[in-house]
Length: 274
Image (cartoon, rainbow, N blue to C red; front, side, top):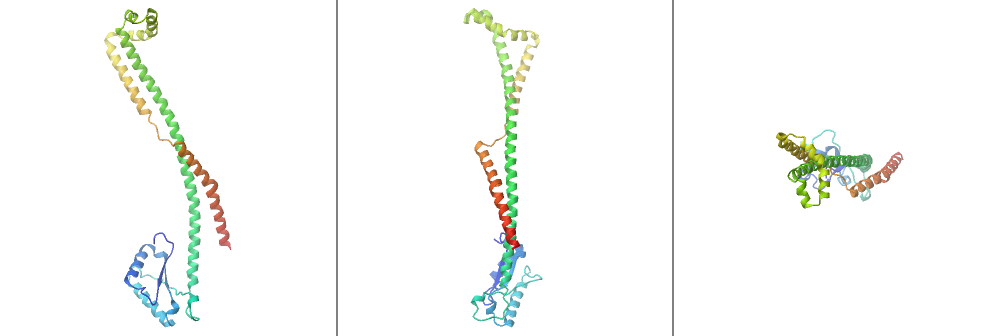
């Protein structure tokens, strides 16, 4: 808790066991990382006797603290405090409890100012992060559209060339007479009429190079399928529910939280001015 608190008060009781080893060990440990937060006070100063007795008690406390290397430091201060309402009679002992209250008020004011400043920065950070997330989602959406376009293009080329190879292979071993026996004459003539450009295209290939050309076309066909797989990789996108949640949060931060922060900061400055 010493890392999180703003002030650490160490109270020494003149009639108690404030100087026991366990207490001093805790104080020394806290002083290692929060020395600037620590404040030392002599409590129940009105019960310590005369001024001479109080001085002896304070000297004893200081001597015990100075025995610890971590607590042996210059500028050591230990105000005396007590609760006036519990005093049976008027005391000559100086009561510095008001200083304690002022230290607490000052720490609260600084902490409040820091919290308000941090809240403003955190709001800006959250808004920027939401805008960045939504912008990245838009970029991912455009990328996915391009990826789908590349996939459609190479899939069409791949299946188109594969269909040409299958068509050429089938009709290279299937004559018009064989097709006429399976269908009527009009259908067979119509089929051969539509595949005639393909037959003419493959007829231009020299006989000795046909297998090489077929292999090259098959290789290009496989390359098209591979490119379709590589270029069609999509990026993750936000669901409509998550996107709507981000927009709602951004709107709440901008329209509700930030105005409240500005209003609270104005009230804080007005209170400080008073």
